[in-house]
Length: 530
Image (cartoon, rainbow, N blue to C red; front, side, top):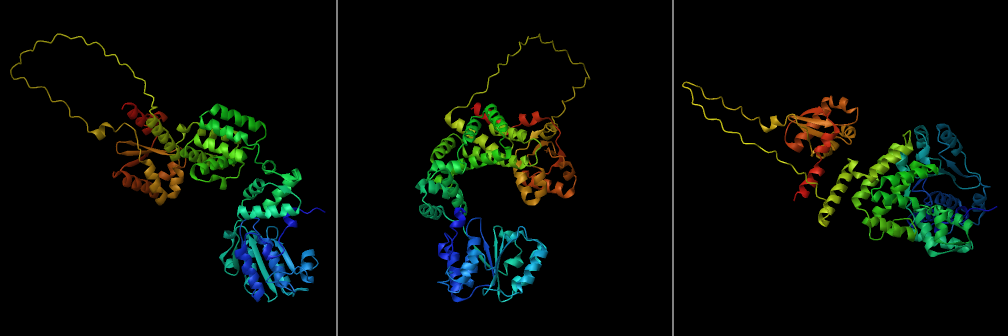
């Protein structure tokens, strides 16, 4: 029966393990000097050799003729553990055996001595999946197991383990394997399997694997099923890197602010049964690649793509700015969160596409910075479009004959003086002015009142006399503002920014007032009038 490559080429000794020399050398030395710990914890991402090293350690600890801390793979114990005739090494999947009863059975079984080996070894994979009760049931046995019992715990999410478990184990952290080492291993396996593979194809497989040698061997296995001569094109087809032309087309139209074409492409993809959440995720990764190109000197080391796609990425990076890229990533991340609970994923994705094409309607700071950068670039290039001049016709004023002054009557009182002008603050008491320092207020609330900051997302504020009117679309805000602690937090933040004390209120004006006092619009008018 055919065996897949990652099982066929699983390492049988510590020397065969790739990229984890800092761990394998220590384990081999402990076996060689006879100081095998009672409990080990192997952590790291998938495909880095955790379970493989656990099996090798279990064999080496029980081997009748170990060689420099490695199992000989020739004695009866090694062969029995390989073919499954010796059952003293038990592998447990904690994802499906995560209850208290499973751990109780393990404790009772651990009291029995092994039949054919020196140690009974329990390899518990994905140990973070155990329940709290199961962890508590394992604690005492893990701390003081019988002398013939060894535990090897493996997990990809060590942060989920209780501190009581971590303190009882000897911990080893497995690193992601470098692309160069994965490529070398792929070339070795391909040579022994009579598979012809190009160097660039092997390197592309190594980069796609993202540090997991098992994933790399799986991709090589898939490529060998397509063709006996593995090229970069074969790898692209096998790993589904090809056929992403619609992403480049979408981004091109976003860069040219063409929402009609973007919406038409989304409609076509939707009709072709493209999942909107996957499309959003692919766009985020696409913009991430553009961001890497604009910020890193050698982007090919951090981007998984073909050479042709890399040139397309570079071309798109030249036609956009870094602030635009960051703004698009932020908008897409928000859309990805909303898509999970949206009743109409297509509509949500279309709304996001419109925001990407028309950044002026976005109110986040990144979009505002992008607009300012675009304006500054236009000023430098001298491309400012002058505002249309409105000719004002002055009405003709007819001179009327001056009345002849009348003689003052005797004992006539002089006319009363004109009323004094109202102060500037009172004159503007009925005028709403956009408060441009509201972003600084939100930054201070990020430190003093985080729950309130979450409510005030995409909010703004207006000054009306002695009132600071807050405009917030979140219906919960009216409840928060009535609570003394939240109101005091806002007043304190406003005072620290402005140096004045304002009374709080809720803004209920029209949207046109915000547009009339848009600071960017004022900036454009000032530049045009230079």
